[in-house]
Image (tube, rainbow, N blue to C red; front, top):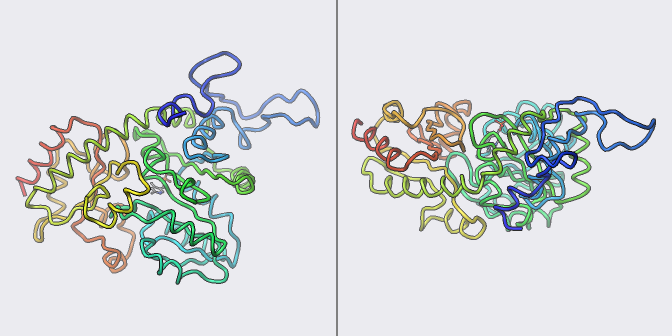
Length: 379
Ligand SMILES: *Cc1c(COP(=O)(O)O)cnc(C)c1O
């Protein structure tokens, strides 16, 4: 089955009992057991709920895994995944993973005895040098946020396997439409489904997928034991959003290409960060492992131009955190999404004060360019 078809017919796409083509919302916390001590498929809805199960099967099919798990947020999915590790374990982590992931590592997991080293995962030697005797996993994002840097998943997971490490990839930015890390050697994929998978800015959800039966067993145990599950209503909303992922991602990509070509010619822009920018190392890696470049683009204004004035001048494009939705969203990472990172660390990671990140939405491209253009003119 091709990807577009799997989106619509993968997972559990029909209700066995009624033939309903839209998965019903099973709003039930418990299930009648007709035999004492039997082995019923459904018993209590933290452990399993048919609506949640439908979206879990769907993401497993889309990522090419054996099992999927749905959580109350991307952060909850990451927390359950990091809970695979124990006191004394060490992780190698990408140095520009999502800020909330750093907060979870630094302020929660470290207290439970986990240690980690942050490195630029584009640099294979740096990753190899960070591996210790007690290292258990490599955790990374590609493309990264907000600089859209691309790391070589095949080479990294090969290196990880040589050292008996798990490779865990946050695939939120690319989505399985553009990148399938499990097929490139990763062991676990996590998602903030609040972004492209949900796709409509109306949902907070997270997913984890693995292609290893033993890891699936452990993740299922942790999902049930920790209990941060996705409820049936949100599970339904998520699978509903996911069905249009392919058409949305194609449209995001087309608009983003057009915005890229506009920004290239805009004299008030100094630097563009976009994996679809030919001639960059990120482009070369992206071409080998992604089928598209996605809908995110970042840029810096020329020195002396004010990012605050620019984003406040926009009329259509909304100044807001988050990404991956129908509407275009713009933000200044230094003040917003990455504001909690100490300024020196942030600058050392290449995130300048004047950097602007744009999640290109599905509005008519002429309206988007006109909005950008009037904001540049007013600078
Ligand atoms: C938003 C985001 C998260 C966190 O997900 P929530 O659903 O907000 O908890 C994790 N990783 C990436 C890359 C994100 O963009």
